[in-house]
Amino acid sequence: MTNTVILQQVTVKTANKTLLKIDNFQVNSGKRYVIIGPSGAGKSTLLKSIATLQSYSSGEIFLFNEKMEKKNKRLLRKRMVYVAQQEVMFFGSVEDNVGLGLKFRKDSKDDRQLKISNILKLLGLEGYEKRNVESLSGGEIQRVALARSLVLEPELLLLDEPTANLDPFNVQLIERAIIKYCEEKGATLILATHNMNQARRIGQHGIFIEKGKMTESGDITDLLENPKTKELIDFLEWV
Image (cartoon, rainbow, N blue to C red; front, side, top):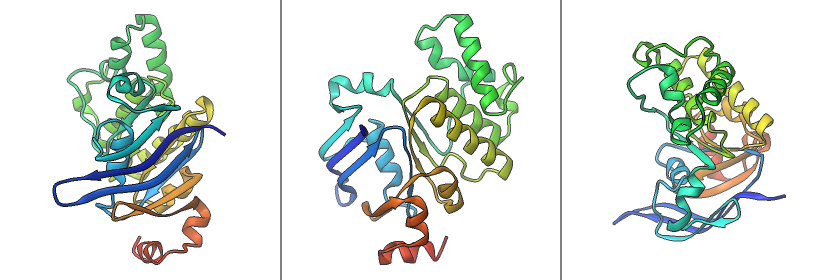
């Protein structure tokens, strides 16, 4: 089995604090991983480090069997997407926002429209092409943000609490779209969440992070039902 992501002895530090310290982390290609842990534990830092958006103090990161270096970051970014908890929309229509990356890639107009139509359908946004993004609800905006990423057909999805503070209807649509996309495209997923039910629904493998360190990992169901470390046991009592 191949690995989409490998982290070896990766440390992220500020002047007076260690934000992340990962000895070894391997992500199997085509699998769905969820990261759980308290706020400030390092979940977002881990995702941003993999996404090439966070510089790290030491260690090595490998993506798609290539060591991440300054010279290849741009090419690596084309094979993955990072979606934050609150994404920024650009002025204009849903179609303008979703198709932006395709324009940069110089896809033909016909190809863009077909891809946009298919991805909007996946996220329950059929007929939204001409809607102005300023008229959308918070849940619709987050679905558009995910559509803008998935339309690029990434091999690796890095999602940072993509359904935080959304209503159950939008949560369901987003979760179904993520699973369907990963299954159909064979994509790899790493998703950070505070929602343990979501972790069960989406994840196959789970990682618990506390104080910047991975303290426990394994099959997501076993991880949540049979925690072994005191840190995870204490965490699950409060969520």
